[in-house]
Amino acid sequence: MPTEYSQLSPDTTGQAAPRLRAGAVKAEITPDDLTNLHPMPGEFSGVHDPLFLRALYLGDGETETALVSLDLIEAGDITPLRERIQRELGIPADHVVVTATHTHNAPRIADVSPGALAHAGGPESYAYTEIVYDRVVAALHKARAEARPARFGVGTGTADVNVNREQYADGRWILGHNPEGPSDKTVWVLKFEALDGDPIAVVVNYAVHSTVVFGSGEISGDLAGAACRYIEDHFEDFSEGHRDGDPVALWTPGPLGDQAPRVDLGLPFGVAPTERHKARAYAAMDAQGLIVGAEVLRVAATITELTSSVRIGAEQRTVPCPVKEGQDVMSTMRQELVDTVPLRLALITLADVALAGVSGEVVTDIYRRLAGRSPLARTLLISIANDRIGYLPDDARFDRPVHSVNGCPIARGHAETAIVEGVSDMIARQLRLLQETAR
Image 1 (cartoon, one colour):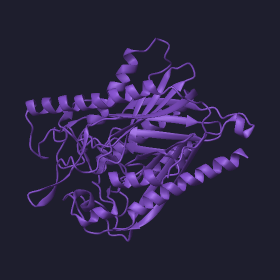
Image 2 (cartoon, helix red, strand yellow):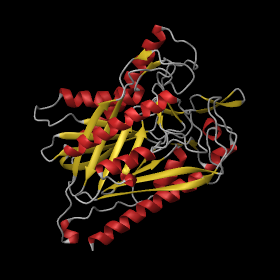
Image 3 (cartoon, rainbow, N blue to C red):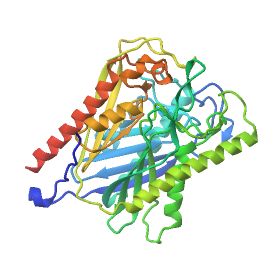
Image 4 (spheres, rainbow, N blue to C red):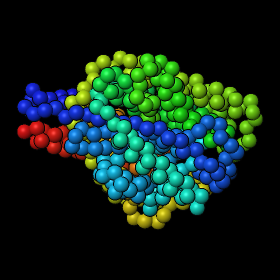
């Protein structure tokens, strides 16, 4: 069973407690030219709301790490960006976690890993990738330069705007609404503030596809973007005037592989929506973003136990998994014929909190098994971390031809164990290292 881990303190180590430093930056990444950037067939017709990157820098005096959230449908193999961050900033590549909010009304970036199931981009996508890389590096430079002594706390709430989407209807499995299916409605909130109480950032973790306005044909941050805007606008409206920099809300996707928003545009892809259809969809996007955003703010206000004595741990590993061939979810997806596909695992630990990144769209039941197996009770799962190789269903789900199985690039019997055992082992290793350092 998971246990709470008591953060090392001067009373137990006899040494000075490490001092957390944190800095956060938000920067726009809306493309200037939308040509050939739609990850699905077709073109973007315009911009409804801008896209952003949000970057969080953390250091404890010995260890540095970075968490980056991008308003994109996905980021493929992000290794070149992490290696560039190491070269230019000195933050180890294995200490960097980059995720995408998974809005389906935004481009994708980076290469498709061999054996993965994803939509490969063309020349325009790769040019846009370099623009995003430049802005991420610049944002982290700024976040690090502006980092302040900080304190950290964590809390959880709930939001009922997600629903299991694997529905059996008319004798077949479809993408729909299955209220009886597994669904994790937990809203995780990580709060970072300066020692004078000035807010720096909140990290949000929630499991839902940002597909409320999918099919509108317009660039949008969708549900995740609406939630982050609501949170950031609140900080702006209720600032007491002493704030040093704008607080940032970083959205990280939880186990969303089988989770849809409760209300979406409701049109099949490729059907041109009317302006009335789009207006209703954007209203639904803002409403559901408000629900999650308001819950984040409520939870953040209740987090009163914060500490600046935070030890940071970080590591990553790649697990080669046998490829499950011939499972194209869409005609635009092509799987490279290789023997194995790289499943990338990433970990950042902050005191008794673990942020576990996985390079695909993880389903609810895998996360539930991980939460029960992890050495830390406070274990968050971040999907689409440092890559997006496809869907990652639990082994039992392979008995049904559901979307998450059809879109999984890994043969049955490998992904679930690799995630649960691999992440748990990484967390246990970081705890041992902290204990050894304290001696």
